[in-house]
Image (cartoon, rainbow, N blue to C red; front, side):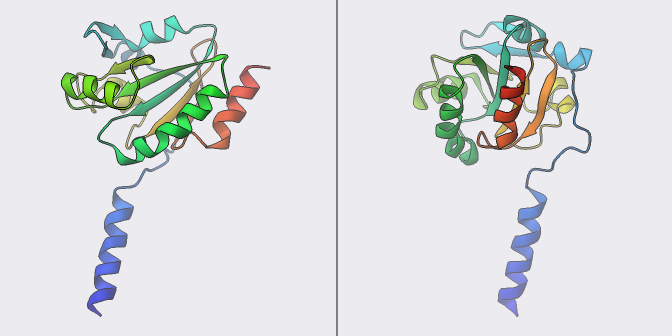
Length: 171
């Protein structure tokens, strides 16, 4: 009986901390979300809008991750495959590290220095992450050439809908 109780409690605990698919799949960003500030590797402030503007005209994949996140680290090699298989697509990595020092260390430790990296100095809860219903990482989004959201919610770089969205946008 005790084993059943432990298994039951573990099941409830596990379910309460899993990713929940948002009920509304958004296709654009709010004004507040676009004004959310991040920092680049040099510590320079940049808004989500500025990041999107840098990639306007290109298909963009946004990868939310952190070096402390086991699921993110398991997904990194798969994300690299997605990136290599899509040379005409831009990739941006948004880090949820807890500090600039952690961000810098993770970039080196996981060979991310040569990528488009930014981190949320404001922490997990901010206008952008709240708007996109970020409740777990890793998380992936596909943005079209006009900065609209083409694929709102994916939890694995192997999600076939990511590649389908990319293929559709590149036609």
